[in-house]
Length: 477
Image (tube, rainbow, N blue to C red; front, side):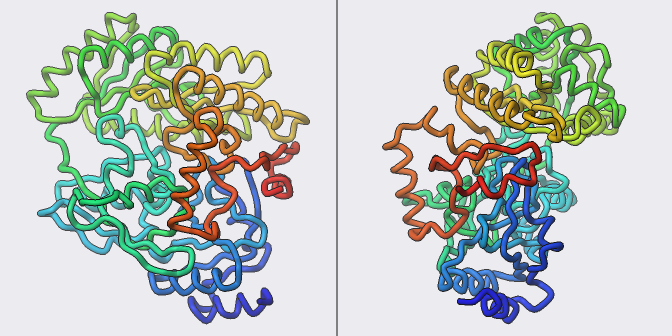
């Protein structure tokens, strides 16, 4: 099928203004939050499930690959479209369709922004727990694709723990339903398999999520430490008390500097690291656990322990944490982030490795991460215009992934594998394991037309050039 005919048929499905194919307009769709870029042949903006189904069926018949796109905040190249591929984006499918206060569920479209859902359901005394750092911008559809996490997932689990059912369009346009109204279902958990499949199984067009009641009491601590080693010791001490906080985040000195450059979050400029800890629950329970948290922090060498006095101070502390990645722009124009996971007991050793790699490669690395579950976010800060710096950043990232695997961890806690980490999969999986995963994918998408070239190693790991925009030719080599 000629490209012009294909585009004409797309326009007949969704309308002329909802098919984007001019190069200048496509520039904003060629990348996500990673360093990779590749321009799609076109972007289509459907309004409902029927239009998604017809678009997918048309692309399937024409032999064209399809990539779903949420808000483009992903950090592993998950929304990068192969050359000549079609991108399906969801800014028009952004409605909260229903809130059931009795059963504590919400039915939403994939383009709903995470924070918008949380804000909306709070008027009913409920909340949506998963809260990625990109919460103000990321969409529920993208969260499902990557099984997004966030600070409060330490206690409440990642996206997969909060999705009950989905309406899904498969690669050939067929519409299927996974899960259902009940929180538990018999038979195979196809809903669970779909969440985190990074867009390779299908595209969700409506999503039923569970909501939690807003807690009776919330208490937020800022533990201030002279160095990152003592902060790591405090993490183990808090958990050692038998406490599972709602959130337990670590921010190192460089990240504190970046945050304080753009907003006064209340972090001390002379701290080696801070821990941001949040307790939630019944008032009496929070009061009791507060004493244990304070003891754990003081006993492990905290220079100071502060407790937010009101909602405004609590919000200020969290704004600092959730704007950290954007604040890194005050230190360097580019960053490359990986999100490996290690056991909590290995945090100190892993962070020493980060420091050693930073010094050896001459790359500044900042650390702000989910310390409670060992999910690190070493962020390499650099200027991509400097010759050779991208290669150094990628080599440094490779060493960090190898170290995570060697310490008994894994490659990703919430950002997904995508393009960025697919060639590292043999560090944690045997060939037989990956073959089994691919057979599961083939049950959903036997022609591999959805988001191909992601997750599994295929030898096409790119060799970045000095400017990130020139990666396209090697991404899918």
